[in-house]
Image (cartoon, rainbow, N blue to C red; front, side, top):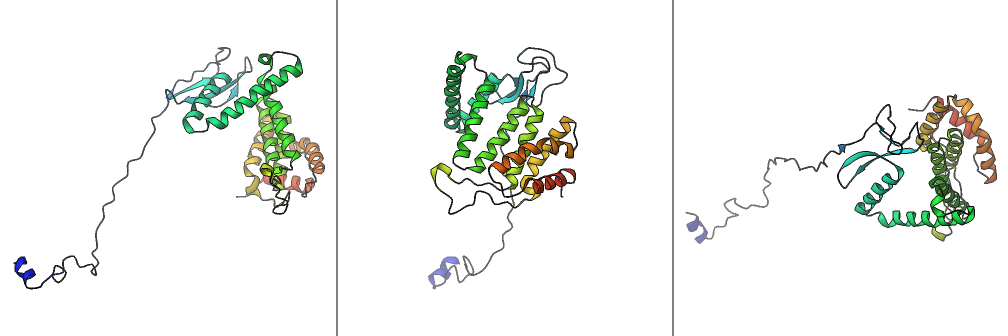
Length: 279
């Protein structure tokens, strides 16, 4: 029958077959796409310091200092066997290096490692000791100070702000909580002035940006304020007492680089936001 129709000049379109002008509704059944779920890490953490072996009251969940030997204990998941362990600084670095090699950031990490080696040698000459005798803390502190000087030299104020926050974290890790608080407040004050890099990678951006463009808003510094509040709580001081302890550094440093937002105004905003964070 179909052959007779075609032989008489009929077409499949005339029959209504393959008619492209007619929209056909199709009910599509959605099928769930397979989702890759990485295997859960095997937890091999123990309540013992990896440096001195002393027993701890609880298993560390993040980097913390041992109450016995005061060495920092690190928690890492080793990608080689997918195990989560409490490690020494050397063990954590080994895991970090392995992860960097796997995620494509090893070149950047290696550059940092090479700089640490060079800094350790330089400090060894300066202190008249072998490079191996130079502490990791001294190496990190020297690098942070070099970064701060370099950022200030080129008026890269955004980089400078990040270095100040890195210094605060380093001080906190060393247990120097009060000094850490001062650097946190200072870095937060810098952030409220909206700093810019004026010579990123040697390019002069003076015609594009101002060094500082303060538009202080809570959302701009909410993360910094949370950290500041935690440190004040750790010190056992009120917001007013904490800001008073940190005022001298913030005001002095702000005046030295001519921050446009006065410290008194910034402090008032910090006080308000720390006591009653906007929702």
